Length: 153
Image 1 (spheres, rainbow, N blue to C red):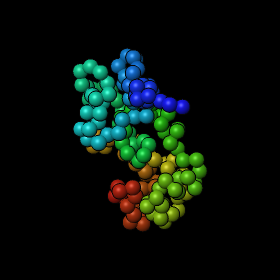
Image 2: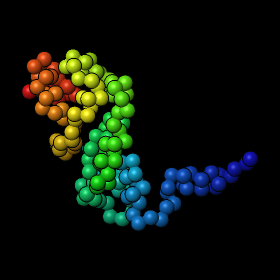
Image 3: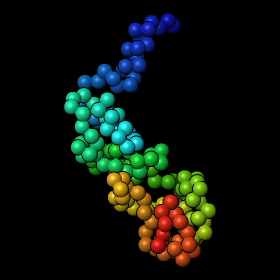
């Protein structure tokens, strides 16, 4: 099968959604979220959505730590779906995701899945960070531990 340059370019344009004619392109751009890396998120949004450049905050987007272990801007109201999709499948999956903090979780006698289930989102410095519940914080503090980079008190 021979493919011309024009056919290859047309295929790439269609595959990457560059030829779409939706309302403003934001739904396609934000389907998986837009990674927040300081001012680059606003630039990425402006480059992909036609019209006057508008930042993520101005669009009412929600910032949360979701996939790839990084903060992403998401469409309003989509966080419950992300939480369900990203929830560990079991203790083995949760332990694998904890990586370097796994030994600390073992030391406070909380199963990895239970530790991840006890977390909740809270606003912090313009982002959403996981925060352990009060019981997990008390147990960790009694052992002088520091979990997920956040000192427990």
